[in-house]
Length: 288
Image (tube, rainbow, N blue to C red; front, side, top):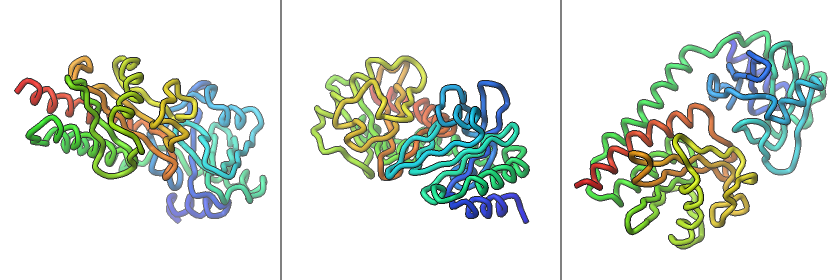
């Protein structure tokens, strides 16, 4: 039986929809090598400090930890689920997620966790190659745009970014003047005016320095402003400035309760690549 098929069988054994094989490579670092469901999809794309993750810390101290609740909650890193169980198997923290895990006995979780640790030893090479292709494809889609106006460019960039990161919400804030906001042409749209959306994004834009800004749980955000707050349906958010020194605007994408999750390292790389390409597209139009 192939590794992928056996990992699937182990997931089914404990009622999991996702399995993560998090290998501890240093006291303050774990990386996800492979798994099932999102564990496989996120292979090579989670690099976490377990001391900053309560669930992972509990696994390390107790050997076995559980989370459960009637609604999705952040379990660790970008992973959200209604229920999860984690087991310490030597250098591996094996996490099983999904509502079915709640009914799995501790002994079943332990046995399945040990076997997962025996099976997984590296990130599949084909997964690494696929990730590189995904980053390149996202950047190329934006770089090859030929918009006739800033509005058309902003709409295209917001839509491309939300699709590339599998987000339900995407927006580009252009500094102007006048300042305007442009939402992705599909997905979730807040019930609010353009002025209200701009007001919710401005504090992020003002506080954001260089690089990416990532919130894996908007419930703990320092920017809890409606209509883009946790109570409005957002669960995770990623933002990056556009143009040289962020002069042109801000790109924001977000996940909602419709499909709760956060942002992996791959998602963040995709956002960075899109922002680099988008900055050039927008600056050309500003200078024209």
